[in-house]
Image 1 (tube, protein in one colour):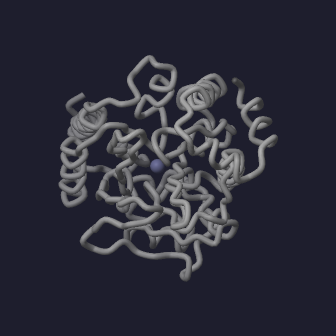
Image 2: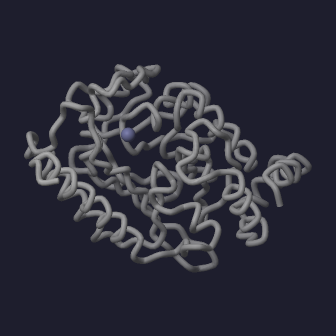
Length: 306
Ligand SMILES: [Zn+2]
């Protein structure tokens, strides 16, 4: 079934029926929607290219674009959660995807985020204005959301990131310094400090159940050790130590389904096409190992070893 057919089917139902239809573990509808995304989108696709939404597991849905992830966790009476909102234009696609699934964006009460770069949070202010939700971010990420400018301490500070619309103070909450779990949308979301790609990068894990079977979903930050032309990770031992700890924490997680802000970084398209398993107990370990290898290569280059 194409994304269009799915949208037409959704349009034919009342809002309530659509929401129930989307929420029920209907494997045929889910499989068709997943295939529609994989057919419409390519690996590491354009950031603002619309892709159809689909259910991942339980009450967790993919509502991002072809190139940038946004995750919806539906909580019914308790309100919904969204993680990441894409670019300024991407936020409109995320909002449209939530509506296509039959859910009301105004039911989103809380927004979480991966890292403070414009491709993942440039649309935050727009998304919060459309939904009335608040965003909870780590202290370094909150500082960037407040200004709309990449931090001067960011490894990509000199990369020419465009500014984005800042988030108002009253829509912004800072994560508690202990990084305790947050209960929202009927789920417990555990934030995991994942600095390295940015200072405030955060991964998230929560549990989803369907048909009595529960899975841990992990939304791992990019953790990509790239920078502008002058930054050297080896000049920042504290960040480097925190980067290493974050990688170890991801590798050690109880992890059934791994997702990433750039979906192909966690092989999402392969998993939707059945070329890699969606439920993959080793997914986080493999992701962490790949990041560690990139970081080692990067540090070797900084030492002039290759
Ligand atoms: Zn980034």
